[in-house]
Length: 314
Image 1: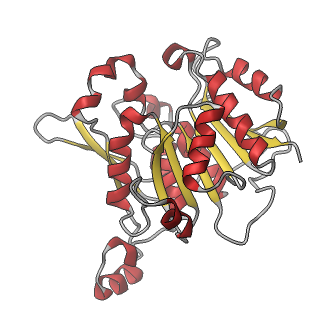
Image 2: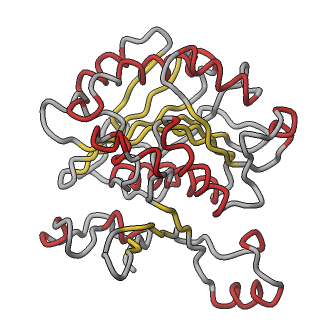
């Protein structure tokens, strides 16, 4: 498979036919019920990440997988729990069961897999870099994560990851994390001391965007003074669906930068018209108290995807 990320054909933009370069890059597959053709799950893999011991393989299977270089496949249920179906028509829960192109481009950017040249790079055009590195593993917080695909992939790349979203879709998210990462998942029943002692972990937690919500989350994680190295949000701004919740998103980002000014915030969004609210979101972010800089680093003309990097006051 070619790694050229900008080779979509004109036919690739149908919702029902073929797949575009975002989906092709992660070997995305929609898994459907044979009788109804309704989607039940999605699967994906990441270039260079292969099956290994943590997948429950035997020694013989591991050896064979290493020889065959079998890519590790992650399978995620997209079925909402029965109790979550009632508010589905509001749209937010449905959006949390979709994989959006902005999420794929975001993880490509974080992993250094996104081709950046004069046609799509903005500002400094620099590849992603942390402001500082710790002795332990990089920590990533994903806000409004939905299916959590970027966080899943970044965890497979070695980071400690906390996935957050509305409490009413958390059951689905927790189940998907547990089924795909049985040896590194931390459940919300785990004590704080056990959680902080884990060397490599991924967990799903509820978060209502606000300064108090951020404080509560960090207290539970015992990260009240350290915060996170990376904060990621993908397609979290679209006023026709989410209203002006971006005010609360900015409030949360600002608080995370106050706690850790060296934190790097990556916002990846797809433009969907002049009323999407993205310009207002970015302008407000630039004026937040603990924001030092906001830079657009990537723009993809065909999909209208933009990536912004926000840093604190150092």
